[in-house]
Image 1 (cartoon, one colour):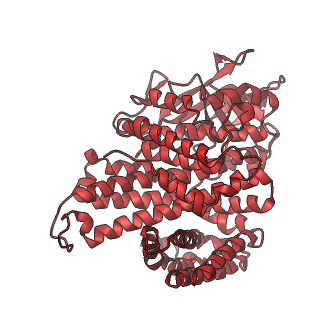
Image 2: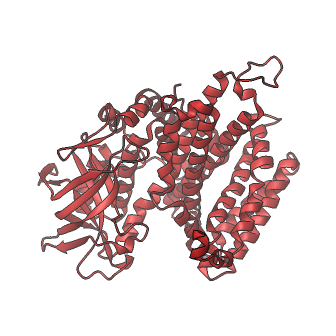
Image 3: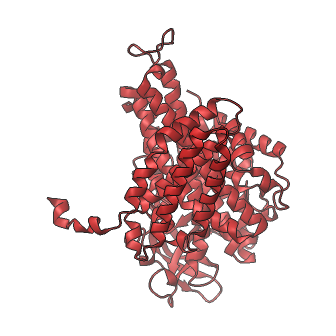
Length: 572
């Protein structure tokens, strides 16, 4: 079945849910008018539907390969990437000073999500470059900006991020890569990095690696790490790719999914690099890229969920099996209650996750445009929720998509299983969802809960306003927000962070559930009567929102019972 980009859904969310108009009202984003945004969405939809989606199965069936030290990408990927670069989609949110479109992150998030629906393996390439562009914009020297940003923005060069090493995964501070100053402003970078998405390709002129390494005087742990820009080809005096740097792709990982995306083991042997930001302050610079990527990865999960949902819906509308309870119906399996339950869950959760991600992007835009700290706090608070709930939704929806297909979902030719295989890693990379949850329960509450309580105040204010027209939906949302407020209070009352960490994952998911109810209620309020958005909101609020109670009960149990279980108990 063909993929159809949900352009109307994005427009609805922009206009009625996340308030893109507030972004456009600022001087920074004044050019992102409704007409321009509509044109951007329509053109991006055409790219995704006509160019990228036909590459989805090709990349899965014909993976990237390493041949004689050269990465050979999947058939059609070079043309697909060129269409992305030539259309300016790599640079959609990059600053105009270096050739970017300078559009809001809210719009960028929608476009990236569409591309993820169409072909996640290929979309991962420009997503990495976008993150590197932002990191360089904020932290690089003027010389590095002038040399690299125009090439990255144009898509002529691609970017990667290199954090993980065999012994240093989530514990980045355990890395062993080192950088020696050469006395001329450059550094010799040595070490091995693993899990490097799009570590190389055969369609860009250069590949630029952001590499974490330790200077000779760097202290142990994360505080002694610096960040270096290490290109595959060293730019000459004119900024063109020159001689080959001392780095190579050792191997490509054999993965569960994302076969079209080459995930490399990279070896650096005294490779020439340039310091990005201040010495020993590499994690701060890298986190600029990582936070960009975390929102982007949440969007990847939502994009895959949309693709899997469309795939499952088309099958359910067409497949006839068994006697259905609908008199005079088509006899298709969409008329069976359990299939309808799965499809409704998929659709309702996609809306909730998409609204959360776009609300996060809108907060980033408002912070960029106004430099007001409360917007920065909101963006920071929503980022781990957008990443974790977006990817968890992608995994759950893709799995349900297989189930809707029944036995045919287990057969690779239908394409349903690919969505499930491809999306699974999104809950792992750019910080596992468990790490996102611990970040939410700890660092994001270091303000005494100010950002959390501000969101809860908005949720309850809207629910109060909705009591007159939609009391049966408003009351559960208000009550859920009160329960969540109590859970935030509990977290703040426990200074032993391990007590919080024991329930951090259900705390994050409970927060996402309540935010989802808030956004569904907001959507229902746009209708005069019992329309489709109200019906979907009713499904979410009456069937899915109640999960928050169990999640928050789990979240506030502390760690005692977990540690009462001994290692021997687990092995028994």
